[in-house]
Image 1 (tube, each protein chain N blue to C red):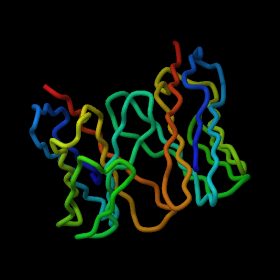
Image 2: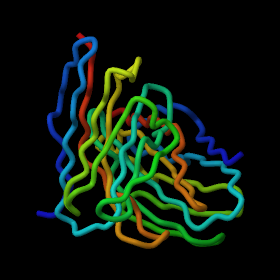
Image 3: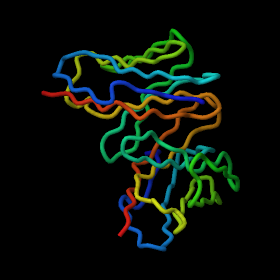
Image 4: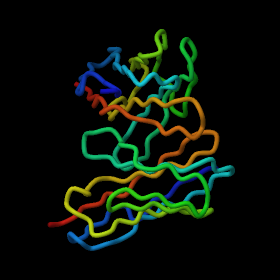
Length: 113
Length: 107
């Protein structure tokens, strides 16, 4: 089955620690995205990539980093500089073209120990 | 500034009681509007794309419509399994997600 796989489902971070969230897709999509979802707020864009080896900051990129070495993979690192990292993180992908909808994984919930 | 407002924030209906969810937007050059369904602890699931005013799309008990400033998601004779949060997302050069409407259908 084609889809987007995020792992782990739950993740705990200690103070001062960097953690990496995995996102893999087998939909052959060019574009991939990372969003953050907080209670009572809409999805906010962290980073996006439209092609391998290229990515752009979204609206709330501070304290996060990404890489796009392979078409299928778009990992997100939450660094110690992100002071409020507790949230539900969603990865999405889409085909090229503005009319293409984004398809989402089932998220990673990050909490602080 | 581009904005999206969904109303109501939450809606409780009896099974079989039809209603509509609203998505109002101010987007300078609309290129389409997406509707998603999100279950608790899951990612959003794509439902519909609407491209231009006057367009309608249907899927089972759901029908989405689009005007120049609003979109509606009509739900006809809902069942408990329709309970979820429904998100709308208009797009110009980027997608903007609304905060969603939490729909709860009582059996």
